[in-house]
Amino acid sequence: MLTLRQAQASGMTNGDVETIDKGGQWVNRVIGEPERSESYSSREEAIEEGQALADQLGTTHTVRSSVPTGDITDPQE
Image (cartoon, rainbow, N blue to C red):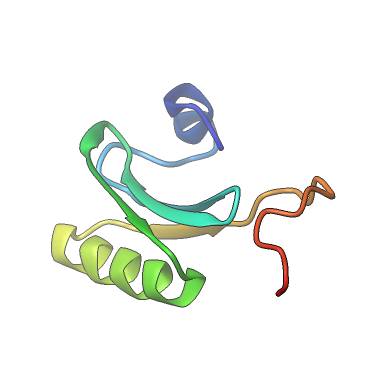
C-alpha cells in the first residue's frame, strides 16, 4: 500500500480514490481523507464502489493489487 506521500508522488492528488488489496481484504481509500475508507470482501465490489465514489467526487480511480507473498490468507476447504 502506498503512503500518502508515495501516492501523491505517483500523480495521485487529494480526493483521488485508490482500491487496494490488504491481505485478501479490498479497501477503497480517498487520498487525503482517511475517514472515507471502506472495506470489501471482494475485489469486484471494491472496484465497482471505488469507481462510483470517484465519479461522485469527480476524481480518478486507481486499482492496485498487492505483490504476492506466498502466504495463504484464505485456505481452500
